Length: 156
Image (cartoon, rainbow, N blue to C red):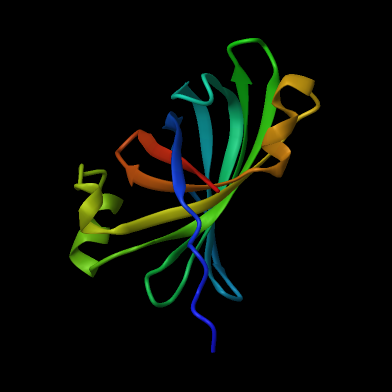
């Protein structure tokens, strides 16, 4: 078997601070507890993308029986030049039961204490940002009581 080629690298892209609303549960569903969190405004700051989060996005979630949270967030960034950029982010959050219980209570927990990663895709009609439709990013996240903090890295 030939050796693996050089692996892709991760390039720092931007950091997101997004305000989050109250968790709404739809109750038990076929694959776990179905719920969502409304997304408010926030900031987007980094070497490749700057702007603000447009209030009105939603983070859909499924809390599986094994304690893993499946995440499917959908929101919009307004870049500093006014362009609107659609963001779709899907991933997982999980960790030791005591750590996840602390997060559920709204406590601040160091990001190293649990796994919170998403794959991020973009779309836009703005010509200056069209390259984002061909970009994949990995986000490393941290959940706080009223904020989600994401460090995005462009996958090369």
